Image (cartoon, rainbow, N blue to C red; front, side, top):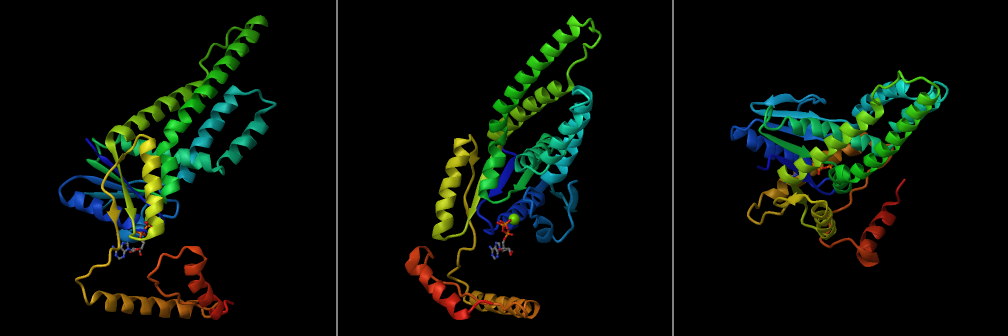
Length: 310
Ligand SMILES: Nc1ncnc2c1ncn2[C@@H]1O[C@H](COP(=O)(O)OP(=O)(O)OP(=O)(O)O)[C@@H](O)[C@H]1O
Ligand SMILES: [Mg+2]
């Protein structure tokens, strides 16, 4: 049963909008649906017109939504590990270990794996709390990393756990030699690493067996190339692809459309011009060609040269 759906794709193609709309369609069909945003630059709350937090809240009948933050989760986890370290490492090296752990929060790997932890918690609740989970992902590269993280981290955690096991054997031997055999408590760090590895393997199985990825793309040449690459990385990682959503296809049966879009953009242009009067606002027209290579880019180069940017 496929119960988890990811909406991924290049920046700005409509992932958040379509993830929210799809989740709404599921809620309307009577399924308890949770839609979560994993993009650090959250906009799901804007699309749903409601302030969201890390804890799922029911925003419409049958539709719950949350914006999860890897950074907040990372801080929580680093605090736990720091607490373990206080018991597990010698007192004289503790300040250095604490400094190292404090810095770990700022490394991108920590934030991404913490985000995955939070997603794992939510995936764990699909089937009990919710019938379906819809994930609004960050742009493609980020999503591929997030989805392949369990596979990448498992060998790393195994290595760490092995080193840790060796170290605590040695510690026990030293303790035995000096006659202090009382300390036979299980190593909390090692236990945590094992638990984490099991959890990641569980998540990877969930992703491979229960998840589907919908790639969202706009009908232009550059996004096309990226979509084909993303599809390859995702299937290489063992994930299943669902239908590709081609967003913003120009309809050929709505003669009033262009006029309404022109009205909308004039309004936005007016507001931008008022707000950024001191800096200048330059309108760049929509062009028909794919803007790659010096020839086609040259059109825009001339335009920007003529605009004489402040
Ligand atoms: N089919 C559509 N017709 C008109 N406007 C659309 C359509 N789909 C999305 N948009 C608009 O395009 C903009 C970008 O959409 P959205 O925020 O959903 O993209 P995104 O892929 O989530 O972006 P990001 O990569 O920044 O998270 C929004 O203003 C949204 O309202
Ligand atoms: Mg988005």
